[in-house]
Length: 492
Image (cartoon, rainbow, N blue to C red; front, side):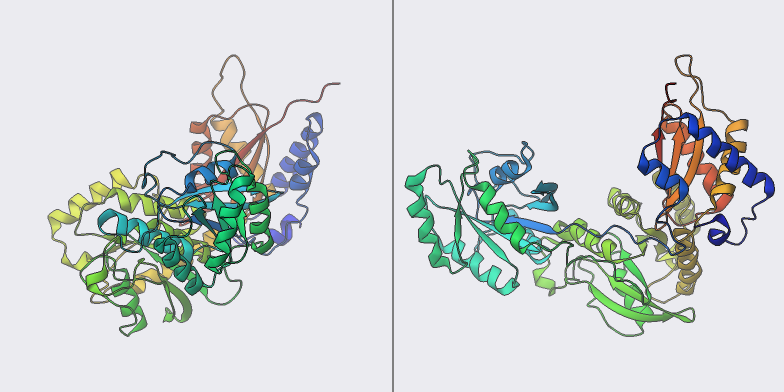
């Protein structure tokens, strides 16, 4: 791909830009570069089309009743002690995800709390969370204590798994020697196929069980895959009860989603094609739990999991914030999830029409303090209930998506960075001053830049470069990623 084919309008390339790039490329010959470095610098494999975000890894959920050794099995698979293990039922409460690898295949491993059919209180929330883990998993490892055998709770889990329709690998844990093989064989009666005898504590048989998982594990997760083509996908995010469903109903012009003052009434993400600003968008309401009012327990348990699944299917996220309430840590956490997922971002302040002058003043101060990391996010002040100013979401969404897709020509990028570094060089540390050798944009969606340097570039200077890139090229509404590759001079 040449710079001419990649050039967006508004970034004219001058002969000086081209000469700067040629000089920098020539200077790179003095440094040790890997074949990957050279391919990146020459733009091999890059096309004018925007690059798709990385597909989500397939998900394996480890479930079972309390104290059957789920966390011990997770630690065995990870080959390190990550999950908390204690000989007391119910130590694991939250759903915890880890990236794992077996036989060259990478996947997400989800450790869950124990599932009990008649759970109450916090145990009920743990059981509900395990159900959601099954729902969003691609494969389930069902762990049973072979020394105890199948219990009524295990039978209840089997019914749940059959309803889910997910591939299940039955793990008969605590089979420490050959004498326990007969106990494991008794679990054929559960009707889930072959029980794999395993000792999570000693590692016996765990490899065979993992091989069985890989046999049914898809290459890419069936949940949260960004669908190519079609209308741009918008995830509607925010903490419970900020008005996400109300906004979707207003945009759709119908009572499409259950709305209630009790937080957590949305169960399943609901896709809706919506005409807005003369074009069609695909909105996804991701509040988390759609259930009747008297079944709203455990709502917050799902928020992070649902948000992540929605983000992986979306291109841009609207994070809704209740302007009447102080900005909460959970608001900041949702915004950070969008940034970490590499999606475009718009922030909408709901219930703006109900604010008096004093609240508006204090809200602006809160935004300056709590959302200091996203001054680049477009903002819309709206009312989901009345529909006031929801049309302002359209230019904000378009701006964010344009930035998300934007590519800067290599010549223009290097000429610009050269002038920035000349005016504000990196500080001298230990008698040495690292020098930026060359820069290129590796991909879009979100924009990713790779900078080659002669030494370590401090975090503060990286943030300075990122800020300058935003000032020069826009990038309003998208996170940008900046990585530095330190390369040493070739020894002659």
